[in-house]
Image 1 (cartoon, rainbow, N blue to C red):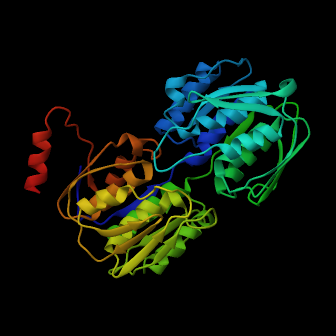
Image 2 (cartoon, rainbow, N blue to C red):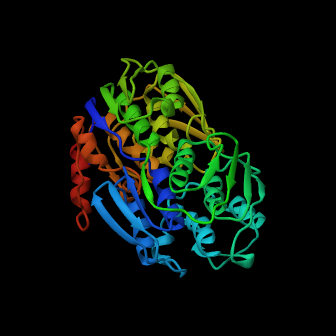
Image 3 (cartoon, one colour):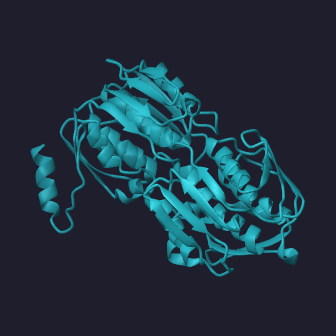
Length: 430
């Protein structure tokens, strides 16, 4: 529940990158020994992945809430728990890590947020090129390497895919010979996964470019690694500060990773000051319209598109958003319309007539990033906004409500399980 109209002020600390952590945790399965991972974000997706590893026989120990030790020395091949795996997209990373470790894998098709088809055809293409037989039936992915070990191969990705790049990279780490991934994705979390694997004894070169070369090794050893800060969490707080007209110092970031977001915010009139490991965001008195197209890194991230859409509802003039990654990422638009936004969607294009005052309403978090967008909208709206289905938000933002409260937001988690009329009364009064 959010009481809107309060500008955010203060400092916020960014957690470890979700998109890196959900690949690095499955990659720990490749390590014959103890790996210590620091700066793990405390979110439901990482909790589920750690539970899955434990069910596979790994020893998982928490040193503190954001530091864990994973020992996969005695892990043996078995089916991963279906009920957990079907809830998260990152379950497909176990295809690469299990194939690399055991020469066989059985996983579910990816779950998580529903904002478009998530095909794994390029993942399968990569595994098949390395000598695996892969079949998809009854919602499961079955894979088995000929002779029990994958072989190095050249894999050209028909479309830039973060998930396929990371999955093939993991599978190739313990494969026999060299694997070359062409047209690879270049996101910061791909570099982070490569750095993690290399710190454990892998030989991965070229991460961050469109050609990645992996020379397979016989085993990975234990070690320590610290996950990078979360680019999308940082961007979300930057957008929230700009939308509410506040001033927020976003700490523990890599400013270069944020340049694609900072550039668009500057176009709106928002002031961005970069420091060594932080950025200061100062909201403009009047936001200017901009056009945005989401693209693979270093382009504007698709995971920031709903938050930007909310900001542009407040900007003067007509803005256009073109979604270049997913087919169906505008589901949040219907929720913003409930708050008074004027947005027309045609396929992958949204036309936003900005400068309208948003008003509080009962809205849903359609997915992780849409949920964050709804909270930003609520903080900018007149009256009370209630965001339902916040379990989506908890998948990817550590202590989101607590961090926003520390910046001055009037926000709280409430339960109305059996009394919807009480909720209606609160909204009516506002």
